[in-house]
Image (cartoon, rainbow, N blue to C red; front, side, top):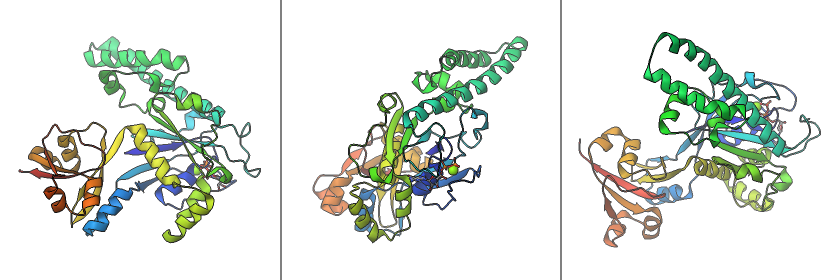
Length: 356
Ligand SMILES: Nc1nc2c(ncn2[C@@H]2O[C@H](COP(=O)(O)OP(=O)(O)OP(=O)(O)O)[C@@H](O)[C@H]2O)c(=O)[nH]1
Ligand SMILES: [Mg+2]
């Protein structure tokens, strides 16, 4: 899973990237370093930590999410977007600035809702340009050769065109799988699910409920989730010893760390969840779409396991943590044997039996 961090200049994108991936990329008030960063976040999961406390495995492997942090997109500079870096991202994280800092001017003043809307316009324009280029080429090709493939691609592009011309993001369009397939090769930014992260001032790190910042309309859109972070102060927590972090958070009155909140929101946005494998060798969290079957889950671990699938031995993680061992779960009737079609639940601990 990979997410691209985008936004206006100097809104805290790289700060959020550092927070999520525990990196130390330079963030700075004035300089404009146009750099793209890539990094990996470990998805925090207390259930996996508790499994490792029981099994004391040689390896403890959290789920991961990759992040790409691209340079700021100034107003009207949609053509400078680093499309190559965003090519394969599953979703975009749009950082909007709600913190005020007189040293860091922000074009037009701080206004998260306006920024959210106007960046969307930039994404729409980027997609329009990408598709228009392709359409011109297709038009020529279709005059030379008759091909069902080219026709299908043309139809998919024609479906998007009026939507983009109306200034509407493609994520609002319910594309048929066939259309989606035809468009997959292009980096269509407004088609990606969107996580809007409001970068709030420190004073609001713990304010509940979070001030809405006029983003309700956004939050109500399909394939959009709004979350908040106090990126700078939360990033600084990365460098504190773990035992000081809880005390610090309690002082701030914050119940959930920014990284937890953002990654949870990303999971929700992308419709994914975790299942676990647990044993003395390794305790590991895996990411699968909500609704994935046992066979799909087996395939995420290894194609051989899917190929030779016999059955899954499934225990809900809560039962395993409460009873303390798989043997205990088995004797108390908490372990179920499930076939290929079983729909895996969030937090299932699964052991696959297979034969290849
Ligand atoms: N007060 C405050 N300052 C922040 C916050 N987040 C970022 N900053 C500051 O804003 C400045 C820019 O932060 P960056 O993370 O580099 O912003 P960016 O969006 O990556 O900037 P560009 O990549 O240059 O567009 C730095 O001085 C940060 O310390 C925040 O939550 N609160
Ligand atoms: Mg940056």
